Image 1: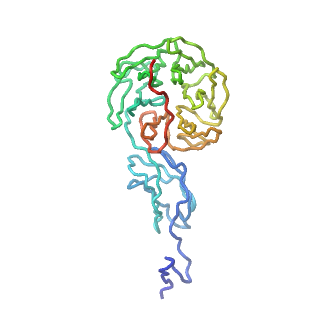
Image 2 (image 1 turned 90 degrees about the horizontal axis):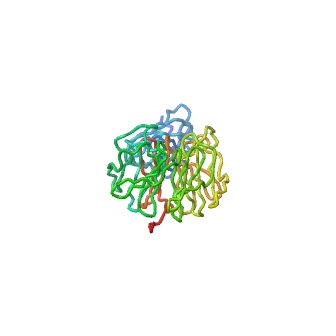
Image 3 (image 1 turned 135 degrees about the vertical axis):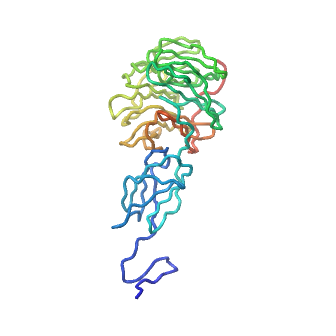
Length: 362
């Protein structure tokens, strides 16, 4: 005898036997953006019931790896080759409605960035093949057009590290091997801009056109537009690099990873006074600001690796999940370019980045 009767109005079965679990439901996804290999946490209902198999999770037609599963929570690794951020969970008894997740699109995986990429006014992306210390590589800096065409830009530069555009439209590049800052015009002609910068790493321009250089041994230099060099401030030495970014209020923000797993972002006033802005990041590296004053840092937070968003009030949360991220930048089309230690990935987040410099006279 059939104990089950179909209730067509409520789409539920009735009868004396135990009710089967209903359709699974996604309540939240954190973070809501990831690059391939990143891990996201999904909260909801009905993912797993007693005796049932682990559910499957798809991003479009690609299956993610389920790392943890319970009835109300899943942790999933985003697979390579994802072209759709439409997340669907299939429990074998039902599927969730599609949930939008922003998944990065791989632009190239033949690079070796160690800091932020740089983006010009036309939206072209520039990134390095930095190499190990003292290694000479065929192409030092690559250019990726807004149509995602990858071309060589600068050759024969030893260990290019930091990149920044000046108001003159020139690309400035630090060499941590030579302690030199190079100036490169749009035709890829290279000239020496400054020397003697120690282990030169991060670069950033202020609104007046002064260039700041992070020497990872403990100094931040300031180079005026007429190339006078000053010691701007000193910090604790870094095991890898100083990364620099200017905030909308004119303060310089600095990260410099140490051997600690509880590192800080420092804020330096225009007169060189150093204060701790935020403490509690693991290996913080490249940074960028949006127009609302939020700071984005390549780092780990509470053991989760990716890009951390820090509000002007100092509230932090992971906004992009991913491993081996060393830097980031925003494009004119409101996307985020994420640099890993061998690739560039583009994320469509709708965030307007803070303009680094307006073009003008030298």
